[in-house]
Image (cartoon, rainbow, N blue to C red):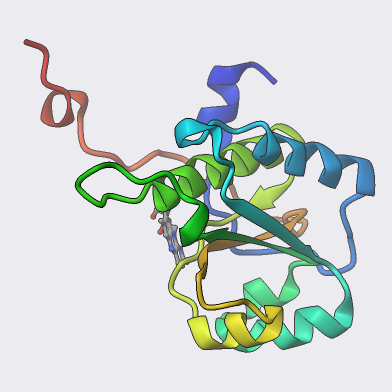
Length: 171
Ligand SMILES: Cc1cc2nc3c(=O)[nH]c(=O)nc-3n(C[C@H](O)[C@H](O)[C@H](O)COP(=O)(O)O)c2cc1C
């Protein structure tokens, strides 16, 4: 898909067909888009979990009660280690920036493959931490369902955003 088409087509999908898992080679290409993402000082402070087994999905589901997340055959979980993030001299840690870039690269790669996704951060963090068995320095940055939209899913007809002149400052 053309780059412009990918960024225009990406949208939050909240309607998944639970009967259609994504083939492994497609999942691999989506994860590869995260692996090659840039990070401050190239520290790559991340781990990407791709949960597909029924057993793990059932442990993850209580973190977010929406049925559409539970319908998705896969859930991507982007985690990172605060101790591995690059730190500026004023103490700013780049972990969250690095994880946002990697996660969005995977989301765009999913769009490019015709796979639906949705950024989710309003999850119950303790549920995820327990399910994944994360050590204290590991943060969960975001999760996304991955799956094919259900037949009859209606794509958005317009992108609701502030106009360019309100958000861009040319000087
Ligand atoms: C950092 C971030 C966190 C988000 N968290 C949630 C969430 O917890 N639940 C949800 O349904 N959507 C969530 N969204 C999706 C936004 O609501 C959505 O991106 C926005 O309304 C624009 O719609 P679009 O993605 O279809 O363009 C999140 C998006 C971002 C970027």
